[in-house]
Length: 286
Image (tube, rainbow, N blue to C red; front, side, top):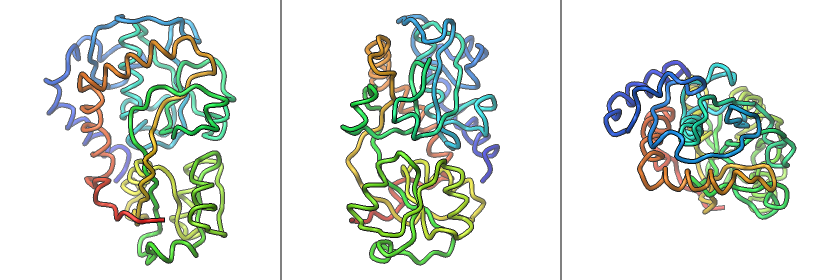
C-alpha cells in the first residue's frame, strides 16, 4: 500500500467521523494545518513559542501513520501531526513548522529552537537526564518486521541477524534481554527497513506502530512477525527546562479526555496499518 493510498483511506475515514469533531470547518485551511480536523477552542491557552508566530515540531521520517509524507513540506495528516496541529490551534498559533532530525539527536537533546518533538519516543530514566518528557499519550510495544516468507519465530529470533535504529531502547533490549549477538544499528528508519526488505538482516525491531506502517507501505515485501510487550509509554520531548511544557501537557490531557486523540487514532493509525490491528501480531516472550 502506498502513502497516497493510505492518505486517501484516512481521508475517507475522516469524512465518516467528521461530525464528531468540533470547529472543523473554518480552521481546516489555516496555514500549516494540512488536512487535519480541529477540536477545542482556538487560543484557549498560550505559550511563548521557540520561534515567534509558529509551533515548531521536531520529527523523524519516515513515520507512516504518524506523519504521512516523504518530507516535512509534503505532510498533510497523520496521528502525531494532527495532534501537534490541534495543540497549535488551542495555543492560537496558525502555523505548524515540521523539522526532520535523526532520532539519536532527538533523544540526546541536541536540537534547538523547537516547542516539542514527536517521534514515538519511549520514556526512559536515562533520557530524562537530558530532555523533559511530555505527559504520555500512547503505550509502546516493540515490533519485528522481516522479509516476506521469513520463517523466524519466537525461539529462532535469538540467533538471527537483527537490525534496529540508533538511539532507541531496542538496542539494550536486543543485546541484554534477547542476548542477540549479531546486531546492526542504522542511522535512520528508511535504511533499516530497506535492509530488511533486501534480506541484508533477518529482521528489524522498532516501535510496533512504525513496523505496521512500514509493512503496509512495503508492497508485500515485508511482514510483521512478532511483538514484545514492554509496558512502556510514549511521550513527546521538550527542550530541557521548557516553560511551555506544563501548558502543552494540559492540552494533551484535555485531548485525551475530550476524545480528540481517540478519533485521530481511528482516522490515521488503523488505516495506515493496512487494516492490520496491533492485536493481530503474535505476542512473543523474551
